[in-house]
Length: 153
Length: 254
Image (cartoon, rainbow over all chains, first blue to last red; front, side, top):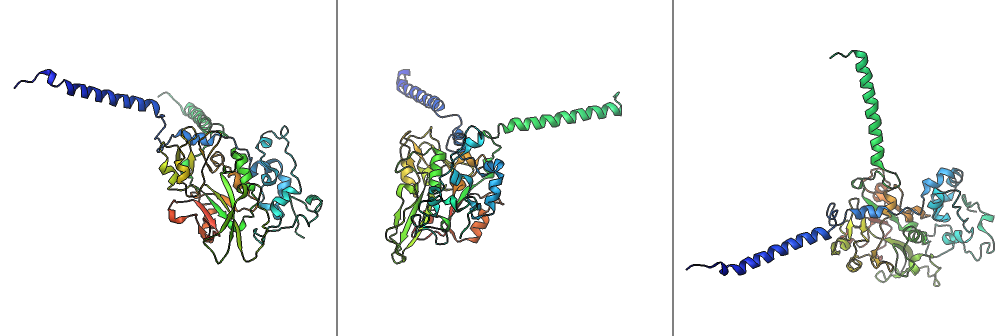
């Protein structure tokens, strides 16, 4: 029994389609998957550096102390030794990089204190607390306390 | 070779000076500008955090600092870190009352019922940067991943916003950014820690209730913290490999 070429034609067509399909898959995958995908794991390696990019908004304690060593020294003697400058003064990276152009706003010497020291039954009992309505209700805390080196009376 | 000792020493000296200065110059080229490309080697670090519940006063400074540092939208459900107040009836351990008004952004008001028999404390929460993160395992496109230094990061340009990871996180740490419709969460201030700074929340915490920790640094205080305290992670039964180590974590905390 002899076989004609036409007997195989359907197989050749299938094989051709298969080859075209695989090639299209490989080409499309090459085009669509970023080159750095899978270098470090199942993710884009560039995403790590993307996450490093934003500039810090809080300058960090070291930057503050560079210029304001006198305040840091005063603070180091008191109970506020562990409180970073930017905890009360806010984010100041802009000021740290441009000290004269970007002057920070002085924190309100009552509401800033109250945000930590207002009495609350759910705070640890050892934490110094006052009832703001009863404790010099009209005044600024700074009138009696040195804010950078507060005394507990 | 027609070379006497004098020219030999002279030439060797010249070469030494040249190579040394070239090496120093090349090191500066490699280092780049310190603020943009620090000599940060990811495999030298393994980040986590020590959180001391006994020190937390619920002031919300961390929540405010985080929103400022990371440009987190001011929405009722968008927090990279937040603080919860637990009110527990010691006799009914399984049903704590958990409050977190605006994520603790404005602090916590005095409770109207000041029952001294109730147990109360604050629990700061954030992404646990799990070693075996459920959120990473479900991401269909590889848009969230554990970096080599143990931080779970999001690739915002690759995220589809499918929300699988939001459901997968057992700690509720993820949200969809309403501006980009992609997922967002705590990045452990990756842009800060790779520059040698601490996270915004740890920087501003006034009582030292939270401290960034590099577990690969033998000098890091985390080692003493873990040794000297009774430490627990959230939901240890989930085996997520959380790296947020809590001191004073009550069993009622969910």
